[in-house]
Length: 72
Image 1: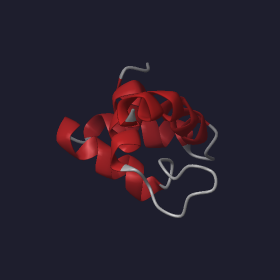
Image 2: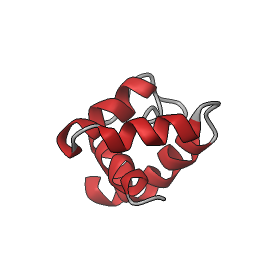
Image 3: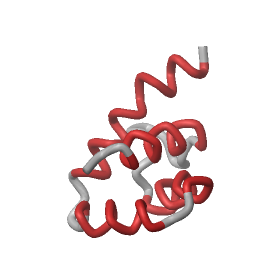
Image 4: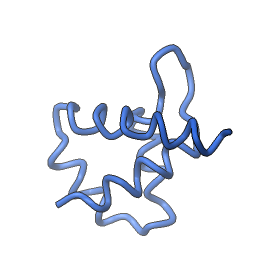
């Protein structure tokens, strides 16, 4: 069930990332970070905090980082 929730909300994280003021620069930075640190980068940026939540979800951050890393 948790993986289904993560899969459902990860696109929200991606949208929040893409709508941030420095999205292009942040994407460049994300791609420079090692793959095992990308989820932490997303968490620190606040993009993995879902509406109605106060803290990021690590599963969402990882799924979001994976999706963002696949963008060009």
